[in-house]
Image 1: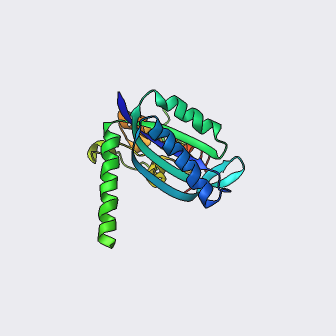
Image 2 (image 1 turned 45 degrees about the horizontal axis):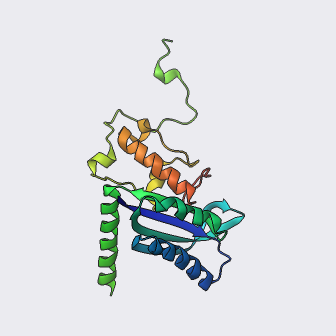
Image 3 (image 1 turned 120 degrees about the vertical axis):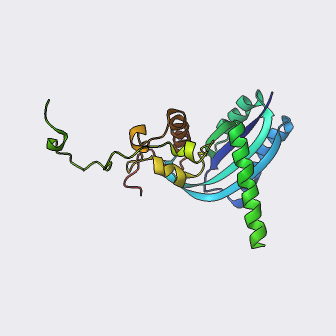
Length: 117
Length: 89
């Protein structure tokens, strides 16, 4: 049964730009290798954390929204746990209201971009 | 305890003045999904210490209070909201 999921994860701020790209790429490849289809990605860049995690007060947030079979999520999270560059991660299964909400948000963001451009 | 309400001295006067009809803002504005990723919206349901506001204050229905609680806990997990805030306005 293919569900829609959303994974947010925080990377340590000490990484250089290409290290970040490389870790993000590693997880995206993992997903595509397992047959998941990535619907949307969002790089929130560096943000201040509400409380220090592992003695760090800022972190690189990254969001991946994807459609996948249920059984790959456990190994996906194990991959997160193993990677020490990831401070924290959260994968969430999206119900139908959430999917509609995300689409509407993306549509609005696109319109805003069009208006500016 | 025939003491009437006014005799009890409250440290801080309760904000609820007259008995206005509380309504569930989610039902009224037809919000179906509470996003755990935007903290400014969730801050409305949290008091100064960062604790969840009870339903008797916000007036939300049980179904949406559960969604709000879950969204706030998720936001806390990914450090968008503090577990223990101090006067976060």
